[in-house]
Image (cartoon, rainbow, N blue to C red):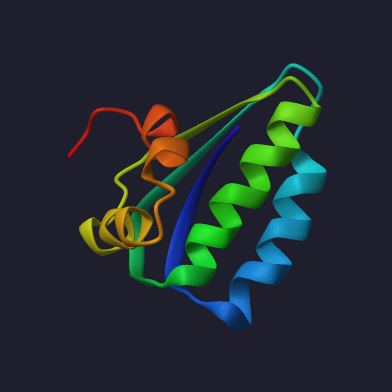
Length: 93
């Protein structure tokens, strides 16, 4: 399943998204998050990725990221979680 994220990805939105998308993950399935339509992604978006990554591991599913904004990638580096995010990111930058 591919989800095209739109608009602002901040604290007001990412908690609900984590619950919704975590529930959509299927055992041994795949979830692709496409950030191309996001206009802003802060540390809450990073928390969303980490939460969905944990959920995917639990269900032996695959999580893939597309069009990760440079600012979000920089936050991952700043917080020291880039090694957790990088393997999920498709080579599209």
